[in-house]
Image 1: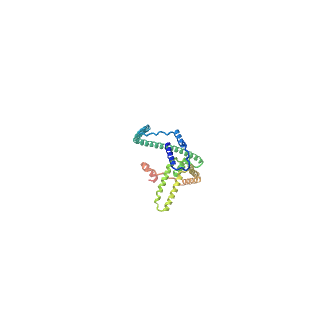
Image 2: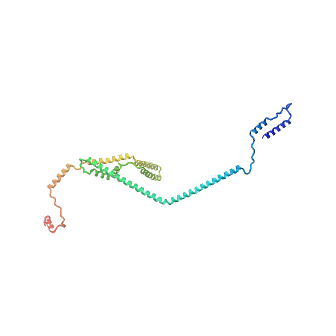
Image 3: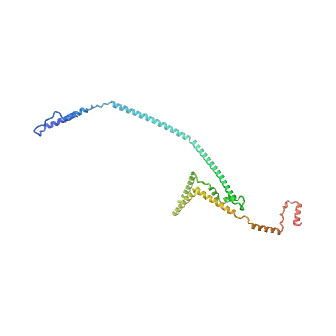
Length: 316
């Protein structure tokens, strides 16, 4: 680099010498060029590095090649391991699928058996709960009958009047029996509520499916509104509050009890009418002819008894 700068300076000096001087006298030249001195100091402080001639095979290239081969072998080994694990996993999956397919029939049989067992247990529980409910209902009915029979003391009724009246009224009015059972209503379970809601929804859908068959637009709109109204009322009547429903049932039962007390308070026998009838019957029996005995069975009489009967009654 310093050589090139020196050559440039030499050429520049030659060009200057060839041209005529502008001044009458030449400037004195220094013995050492400051630029050359600076360049020399720079080269001394930062000597240029020798250029390395490239060769076909250097140690660095061999190291890089060896490193690439090692990495390649590592990746190949890892890929082989992955392929092996993938093959093993696939084999295990196929084995599990085969086992599941072979055990599918047995599992279905076990599931069906478990379903049957669960159904039987649920039925047994429901039957036991129903028996307990019947026992409780019967005890409450007998307690109510005893209390109401005591309230009828002094009236012209028999000892079983309350029980007989309520049973006869329940057979005549099914709503009374329903009201009696409704006193024990505690609301629906989540499963029962879901089943009832589904039944109501399906019923509404079946009714709405018939609406498109109506040709008249006004009649069609009227039918849709009527169906919605009926479904809303059915839903409200089905899912009534438990406490409110029990109160209504108790009021209906009390209404029947009030009717029983009203009937029990009525007179069964009129003393004056009975006295007059007895007097008339006595007068009729005393002033009239005695009543003849009933005619005997003639087929069972002997000859002598038959002759006596004909002689006393017919005179021959």
